[in-house]
Length: 69
Image (cartoon, rainbow, N blue to C red):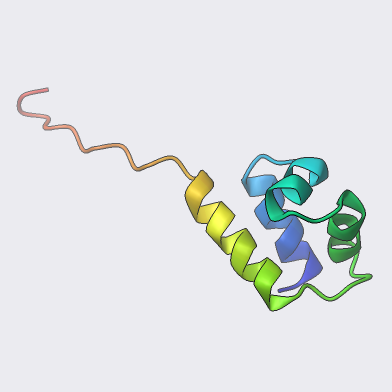
């Protein structure tokens, strides 16, 4: 995962660096290092980020029956 994709994922979830750090169990400084490309993003962090991204999305809205709706 690239630093820009890491940042994009965080922003898409509506989290700041502190919130993401807390959710991942890492420090804000480490999140900053990942986003600035100063540290490689380890695979377990990528998997955890993907899990958070999928869990933070709201469920899809049910389709309305336009004939009865």
